[in-house]
Image (cartoon, rainbow, N blue to C red; front, top):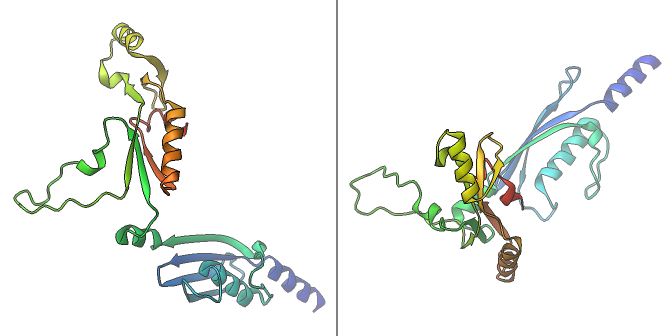
Length: 226
C-alpha cells in the first residue's frame, strides 16, 4: 500500500497539461487535457477577457485549471508552476478586431524610395470590372517613409551570360550573393543615419509601430535587418 501511494504521488508530480486557448475580445475559451495517457483529465473553461479580478485572462485560466488538476494552490499574482505544463497554444482575434475597427497603434510604412503608393495601388484586381463605384479600402498605415536604398536581382535584369553579367554588375554597383543563390547588385546602400533621423521624427509624432518592406528583401534582407 505504501509503495502504491508513493507511485501515485510520483505520477501526480509528473502530471502535465496541454492548453489550447482562444483569446477573443469578449471571452477567453480554454481547453486543457492531460499530456500523459495514464491520466484522463480534460476540462473546458470560459472567462471574460477583461475582468478587474485578474490582470490577464489566459494566465488566470491556466492558474485555475492547474489548481483543479493538481489539487495544489497556485496563488494569483505569483509565477505559475510550469512543471505541470506540457504545452500552450493560443490563438486570438484581438489583432483582427483591431484591424477591422482601426483601433490599433498608429503605424508607419518604411518602403524603398519610388514605391510609396504601392500598397495603396494594390494589384489592380477588379472583381466587378463594370462597377462604376469601386471603393478602395483605406491603408492601415498613417505615414510613409521612403528609404533611399536599392537592390537589383542580376539574373532578372540582364541574362545568363556571365561575361555580360560581370560587366553589368561592375558598372552598376557592388555585387553580392543572395539567400536564393542569385547574384544581386547593391545599387544604393542604406543610409543608416538618415533612417535613424526619420525614426526619431516618427517617435516625436507618437508613432511607435513600423512596417518595413524593402525591395527584394526576401533574397537580400541585409538592409531590412540594419
